[in-house]
Image (cartoon, rainbow, N blue to C red):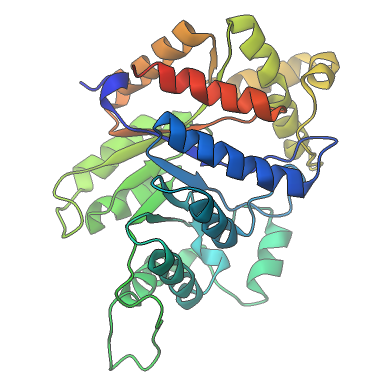
Length: 331
């Protein structure tokens, strides 16, 4: 059974845009957090692709990965993930081959099949009659193929050949879990927003796993929302904006990350509170000992190989401090 000191900890960053701040500040905060994550010993730093959301600035994911890799020295940097139905496989191969050529041995290519946005924006990204999640396995294999030369193919991703980063599959259900297992790829599960599917998906991945040239044994990483502070009360207060942001998104009115004061004063209905309790029931929010117990329990339940921590709070200093507290728990 794994425990917190035994597993690598990593970071999932959405480059949150806080109310009253701009995209430029959000992106600069990402670079600062990445440098701090490296200092604190985090293993990898992934950026997530989302579109048409006022509170998220990581939509140009490959571009941002390049800047984060330039701003750091040793931490692995990658995508958590690139939503493949939004992109031609050739383009993704060229982008990540270029990133790997610039930063050999430091780039990860995490691939998902969700749109990462609403349907109208997905149509704008893909175009009429464009890419579809239904063809995800075929597009994935096409993408992977571009990292090796094939004279018979006729179309080649020149920057990708010989510059293949590790490929991960991301998922929030059983589909990608089974596919990752059959292909012998590492699997990252979105426990932070699909906790009800965590145990079934991890089980499916392990049951379907076939050793490959990439992995001899299954490798599971779990995304988990953690908000750590000096006390449980302070952490709960800082967690308020994340809940209000999601509530607004659910109502079709996405917003930037509000202040904790505004979140605390919002007139939640009983239905709102029940929804948020269910939606964020898997989040680990509290002081150091509460967070330690929560992470240890998650590892005991899943035997995960790695945890990827995502923290959405309004203040950048509070976000950095949360990651410091979690890093200290491994010592």
